[in-house]
Image 1 (cartoon, rainbow, N blue to C red):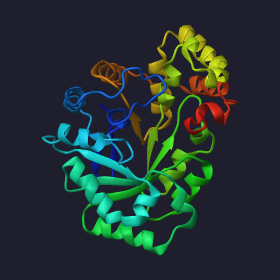
Image 2 (image 1 turned 45 degrees about the vertical axis):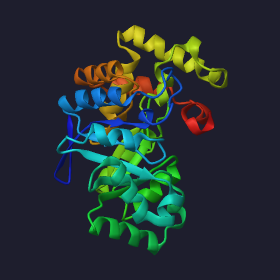
Image 3 (image 1 turned 120 degrees about the vertical axis):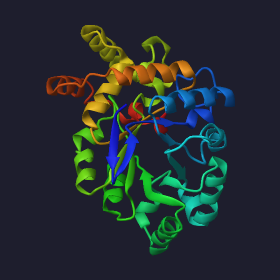
Length: 299
């Protein structure tokens, strides 16, 4: 397992996103939410293989309630949860306490805003909420999940924000084009990458894609051709592309079952870094992907 050192904390670079544990999530998800027993097995397997960072949110159905018992006996865990902006402003303290109760812990490593709306009209009272949460040791860091370039720049400029969760994958290369990783590093902030597999779209057979995403077919065909040519699976390529570029960032992945967890960990453990020529070739293949394809909110 690779680890990121952030202000002295050794965090597994590969981190588990748990939205699938609370919602029927993902374009390629045909099995629905796993049982508590299955979640326990997934968490135990990953923890025993060095993964120590877990991401959840109150908006993920009952994900917090499910992940809490699974992590109950685990030490040295980095737990990250999220609140929607309206939930944060209405009663930040009470809602964080709710997450802590659900997760059966005394403190979150980081609390993130689930959306970036507050960044556009940030007020002193929001900073005061963050200070109270940190000073009372209910959270260690504060952050935000962003969706656009404007969101990112506002997060970068906000002194209260230390964690910035971004979408980044083969089809969505804004972070690479606009140098988000270097900019965050220069400001002492950590990037948390989500949507590596684009909710499973990147791993789908091109003949199984839904009608509303038919325009992604030509890009999936390009992806299939590249993987065949270079004898690499789509899973491995998607992971390696992000891992190579996002050197000092956390990478978020999700899974519906233990088999997927084992596959992702196996692939990640044997990943080979891509060279500059690989990155240039791959990025040029997907330069013109439309936002309606790479942005799930448009689906």
